[in-house]
Image (tube, rainbow, N blue to C red):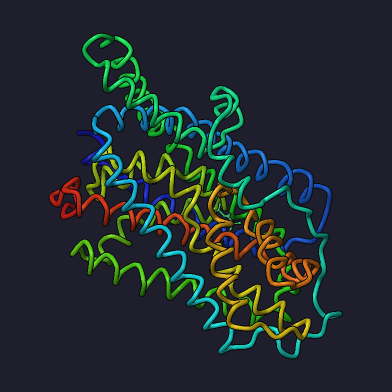
Length: 423
Ligand code: ASP
């Protein structure tokens, strides 16, 4: 009561948004207005901002594996039969794949129209070292979905293997529900506790978001942007089209929902993805937001969101599409239409099996470039300015997961329209 009559408390979403905004301003000021000194570098940027920001990311990551595992086990037990599970799974996969193909096609068209690589002087661009990727062949990508040792998969946070194992365990438990009710309720109650833990971690969000974004902007060399403005413009434009034209159209057509209300309610998730650049770390918040603010049933979201964080990366596909055109133009290589189809196929495959982590898109890009005979050294050109694009595309990655999940939930009558209508 005392709280209501006193100062009105800002909601967590508003606090997070303010933290993002103020963090950007503080970061730019720190970069330009405060001269470099050991106090600024060691105590502020690499001290307080680094520790609080990374501490918050670690808290988010701490939630992911147990929450994903338990909620998928519980979701599968609740769904019960293989038929419903299969139906939801196939529909979700289809949406994830189609949105990725649409995303990359838009990116390629925009890049072909703007020609970001034409007229680029190689010596005007900051070049970084290229990371050599691990084996990303098609057959290994498929085989790596199956866990040889589920404990190892949990310990390493291998999302696809965890999902697969949790679904299998859930199916087994659904069959034995009557015989072993204690085991079933153990998972259900642990799941409740983990959701409460998520709420607890969210209390640190404003401080974490502020420090992460402030440090990023304090460290970014804006000078490196200039020669790359056309490339960056292409990526940003394609991300914008995907997020504010393609997704709203899909929501309005397939789920008959107001897309603006969706984006407004979903905004905190996008903010988290933007600040952390790790879609895998945003999984718990994404599930909570879809269930509590949008109206998706937990059964669906707890299964499709971890899946999406691993296999659905529309924003990453967009960067890769633009990067392929950019690098081909810089090196004067003409790509045939068969090459472009190969790029679309390889980009879609590349997003399967690699969990959303910072700059993972640059690593899988090597596999795409190789598939059409482009030099992988081209990646060095875009590495220097990738940080900011990584933030933007991660926000689009998680929005894609949220949109597909909402559509699948709505079409399977696993959606509460009253929750969606509430403010
Ligand atoms: N950072 C992105 C994510 O976590 C992946 C990438 O595009 O590099 O979704």
